[in-house]
Amino acid sequence: MFKKILVANRGEIALRVIRTCKEMGIKTVAVYSTADKDSQPVKFADEAVCIGPPSSTDSYLKISNIIAAAEITNADAIHPGYGFLSENAKFSKICEEHGIKFIGASADMIDQMGDKASAKETMLAAKVPCVPGSVGILKDFADCKKTAKVVGYPIMLKATAGGGGKGMRLVWEEDKLEEAWKSARTESKAAFGNDGMYMEKFVEEPRHIEIQIASDQHGNHCHMSERDCSIQRRHQKLVEETPSPFMTSALRKKMGAAAIKAAKAAKYEGVGTVEFLVDKNRDFYFMEMNTRIQVEHTITEEVINFDLIREQIKIAAGHKISGKNYEPQMHAIQCRINAEDPYKDWRPSPGTIGYYNEPGGHGIRIDSHVYSGYTIPPYYDSMIGKLITVAQTREEAITKMERALEEFYVEGIKTSIPFHRQLMKDPEFRKGNFTTKFMETFVLKPMEDSDN
Image (cartoon, rainbow, N blue to C red):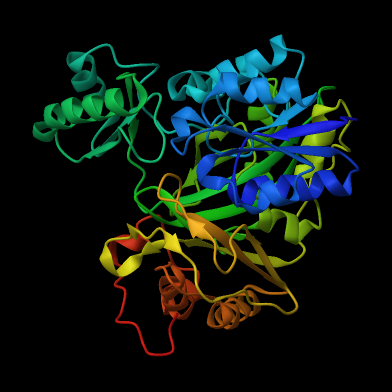
């Protein structure tokens, strides 16, 4: 087992990793930008090293500074969390070259699964269901136009290096195709330095359902059931739950088997997620594979009573997994608490937190790094915490979430709490009747005096 792990991240995920390391008897190193000098990860890690100014380019994405921090503290492993360098093949390779274990996928795995077109080719070869579309990257607009006729409209253009909804365009008819092609490529080039595009048939009334997997260095694989991530805005998840209210036992078995096929095809090692689109007929299609821990790993942990960060560390250290597949024994819901104003088009709301009160009680979990007096910097992702409820049934988990949200106060900034409070009362959400298009028609009502 590792003696010391450097956590190459910030915020709640850095604190989450530090906590598990402490429970495992592993020393920790926090790295931080000057904007995060007063953060909880810095306070609770065994050691802390400043790696640069506030800009993530000059700190959390600065590979040379992170490797230097690992070397001067004698860390024998690096945990990248999610985001930043967690799916950066170059970083994984450099860690390997410096004799530091990267707690995540190898450079080859990241390259194979990170490129959407390459990942789809791998899945097709493994007979994992995929959305009909182009085979590999589209050569030019002529190829794009020809492929669209074969696939049939509506189609979705996607950036091969994409993420976060950038470089994606939905096209319903041929006369809109060229404009979409040009704008998607321009956006992709600006965001990722790569304007490669591929095409997929647009799946109508889709659910976004992902399968949590774990794979060790000895060829063992298992899945840990599903998470429904369909409540999202501009391809950014807002609420996740498990089990999915749309799931059946037969569908879970099929999707779990497909996820394991995907892991085997990629010769995967570590904890990861295979993401699928599921249509109204419960036909499912591979979307992508995330070669890292997910923001929403928390709800899986709650329904199977399992520490996924601990498992991730153990796999990286060479331990074998049991190979047992898991099914949810409870129901869990996660609301992402963002420092954003949902009444002003979700505008970021950095600033200093005044009064801060977290909810408590049975079946409540908070993963957060903020506190009264903490200043949220404007340089990073706006998520300040995750509120998770777990109960015997979905109805009980929703009711518990309503109560918890009433107790959750974050003063001094705007947050997404009012949105979540309204969502938990929404009749269609409570019935489990939603798709990834839910937020396109959701109207946020004026805030009542009692709302946070």
